Length: 314
Ligand code: UDP
Ligand code: MG
Image 1 (cartoon, helix red, strand yellow):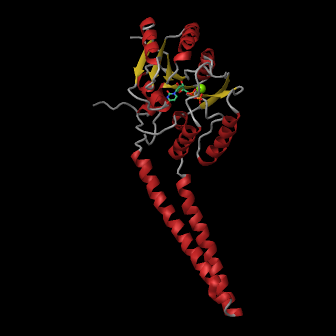
Image 2 (image 1 turned 60 degrees about the horizontal axis):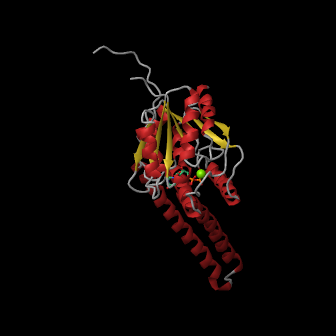
Image 3 (image 1 turned 90 degrees about the horizontal axis):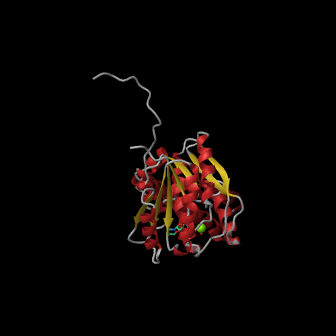
């Protein structure tokens, strides 16, 4: 059996209007690459004719097409996870079904991988999304860069290429809420980015409402950082220290000047101190919860690239 060089993973959710154009552009683009490939479609519980169209396409190009049908809507990232599990290629490219990223640019990603990178992200040359998506994604990018160790210029773009090693690592994760590009990045040895084209959505409408975008960003932040939990312990510690100092200051003042405002300030100092202790307590709980959270995710704790050893005869 010869190995497949490239798998293209495409999640599909209510995309009947654009699917045919996708097929018409994707397959020729892949044929011109001159490598062995397969396309893995995942139907994420579409309520329109998408599943039927995928079936038809499967019959037309059964040699290079695989289709996974979900029995409900589990979200884009779970669909991609399922695609990864089915994929057999040495390299895997994820692509959206809406043709916002041109399939013709797959070659760019692969060329970058040829330079020895195991993860190639993409940056949209000019974004064709609504203005509030621009502003929101810039803000989220900044925040993410600050609280996680993940460096991505353009986190919203799913058009990325991964090596087989990274895919295997992702397949061994059993997370429920996750953000694929970030997870892959955390496993990457030598990540890189290229600039790709970006068009307006060909047909249909975006499947992400403001609400689901916010949910997605929570997945990204909480999945890859404990900073939000740890902020409480930091704040609690700071407040405790300052109110402790404040308390000492008031006691000294009381001894020098005598009673003022019937002890009201002393009460303030005490209350601040208690608030500080309480916040610190919550933060401490957070530290434990965070560790439990990391433990239950069952992510591989490390990835071994190679073990150099001489074969012992047994
Ligand atoms: N998608 C999916 N399940 C969902 C939402 C989206 O499989 O619950 C797919 C969708 O069919 C498309 C891709 O994920 O192929 C990206 O979705 P969309 O283009 O709506 O996102 P946007 O480009 O607006 O971020
Ligand atoms: Mg899109």
